[in-house]
Image (cartoon, rainbow, N blue to C red; front, side):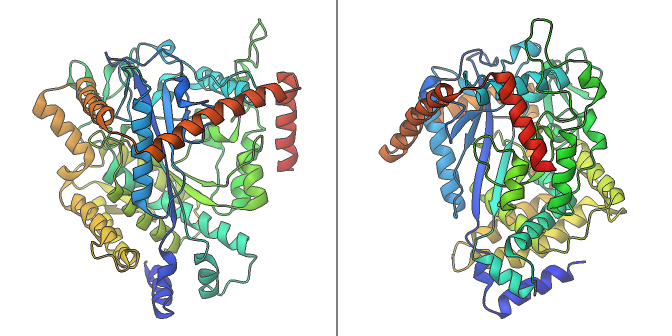
Length: 528
């Protein structure tokens, strides 16, 4: 089963080129709800001092005006990525005026959909489009689901790795095509083994009752105000998380970039009856959604992994991928760890980098419909009952217990971690692997188990536990001073982003209706 990865690693070692794996770029995107001093979702506008949410490259908003999103540049060292994320938290806290960042993936007390303000991006056409898209998400799925927060890990191999790897594979394709296909191989294996991320890093085993107010459910009561599942790891990634009933028939394929793009583009051009009934505009001419298609735009498709390319302004993700191929892979299934001030640790990044390399180098045959069904079921099982003793998953549609499979994967990752450690005497990658391997031998070490244990030990409902963690993090970052270069970096980005938004608004010459028509025509032409 692991002959392919062992052979590839041996080739790198025997040709003394294993160092080519080191120094891949690592970036993070992390969402955090702004809440007031009572723990309710902030109703205030995005703080002006943080810059324009439309154009600031480091601090923006996701679905809600209160759902901040922090973005790091890609760094070769995990420590640099973590340091940048810590700095952006510190800068943000200087401008929150008493508000806090919610430190858990599942939201605080939700007082109905209208308590979650939609993000605004100004008066430019692209800004209006982003806002209308969110209105469409509201009408399709409700707002509560969109207030869930998570962390995305962006990873790419070093540029110098690819010609070496292609030569060892004796592949004669165009290099960019080879790179794109290799990354698609990685994405398929992330689907196959992605349950492991939920088990190791899932940290959302409980939710506020307010999140499912007036909805039927099959959760247990932890206390009067908290619902949970005894063995769950990541309710964020369960059926109560982001889902789209209309997406069930899309059948997105990760077997090649061409198949992936074709099916994704089809979904953005195929109407869905339930969304047609919503209408594009209401009787007052106000937009209710961008269109009535299965996906309004490509980003509406939810997946725990995406192949990515940096898109130019006004360019769709598919256009960018078609023109330039896959540049990096985005892993989207990491929960916010409420015990960590920024929600993720350097050790986690080291493990995730090694895991992504494992997924690249391991054999990755095409993903059949039958196997995809098993893969999806594994993810759901681990999200809702991943800590259940003796839990069986499906590997190649055959049963295998989670613990044995997890330890097997860790064993195969050991040589990768040794290569990534290089000459570092601290052995950061091997240490990170040992830390995660221990969780397969002792389930109580998992973040989800630790969250429930802390709630039980302190006799706290989920809300009060998460509030306590947020207050601790608020104090830490309020007291933490930024270096002068860090402060100047974020202040300059803020000023520049406001200027760029003003320029965008001044440059618009099309009516918004015409702008949308032109945007979707361009997307349709790119797909044909």
